Figure 1 (cartoon, rainbow, N blue to C red):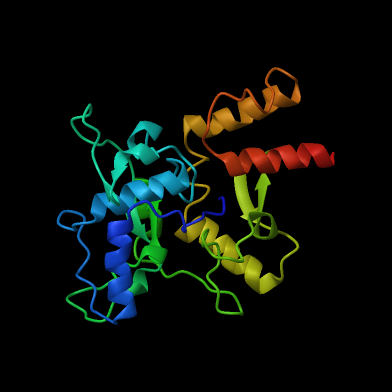
Figure 2: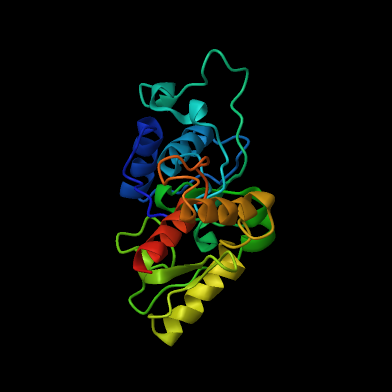
Length: 238
């Protein structure tokens, strides 16, 4: 799971609206994907930042042609004229569900930019749902990819033999327990890789690199970049 730079704002009209809500302590409208006036602006800006991949599993969810920078006009996302509709997979996901209103609650932050990511649909609905997210001893979210202190190499390891992520063994016991919970029970990092044929291709492609059939520059897919990078580092350390 890569670090994400949420400062890359293309949907500036949405961000001005969200800043006004936050700076003036206004109530956020209740979240709805069907009638939110900035829904698509948020979705496509996140895909631009995430390079079309799920923020957690790094599966491909959107073709680059839909989120390229040229599709924004005056701070608003504009559907390209040569497409009938924008196609993508996945869901706009609230990282910390406690910030999202339920049953008409007031004072929540349904449209908070820092709480949004695009996630693979099954991972979001079947794994994460409304589960709470963990924080470390300093009060920082565990495994939130846009946090300033997020470092995937400090927190994660990739076991290429089993094709899974796990907590970095050098972390203290308490934090490792939280990382493992976030990996397997909340964010579903391994759900995106392990049960799918595409996940098995990671192993095939990485083995082909090891045996010089591919180079790192010619590897033929853009998914799962963290697993690939960690495997590469492991080879370099051998």
